[in-house]
Length: 168
Image 1 (cartoon, rainbow, N blue to C red):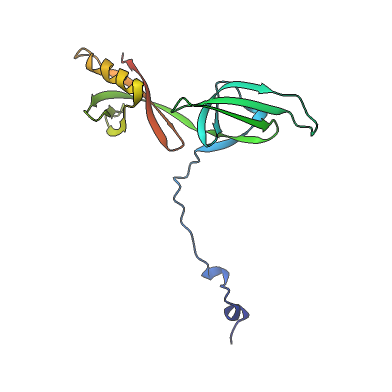
Image 2: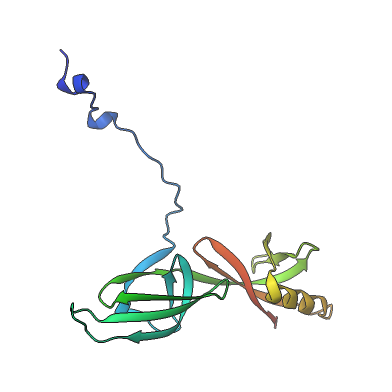
């Protein structure tokens, strides 16, 4: 007996394809209502993770929504971004992780060798810009018994060495 589904080319539910997900399971951002955002918090503006430096709310207008004016600075590049959102709508907030490592070495290509508290090392982050040059100069000027801690900021798939301080 020929089924109607085979004639018109449809597959039964158990014949459907399965799709694998490439995600690690954790999302890189989450939604938050505009009115709940705060100065010095984080928000995604134009697909960039930003720190909120200015925030103001305008009064309810003709269409009944108060607007939130946001000014944010990209946490990696320092570039300024602005956005306007109705206070009742959601904006995406990036997950931002800060990790401290001990700086072990800096090679001639400005790649840093970093060590975790557990003793594991990584060599995939590059010291960039003026901050990178300052960190390399501090590291090279250290006494032999001292060490330098660096702070790595990670958000939305990007990692960058942001600052340094002498270790205790």
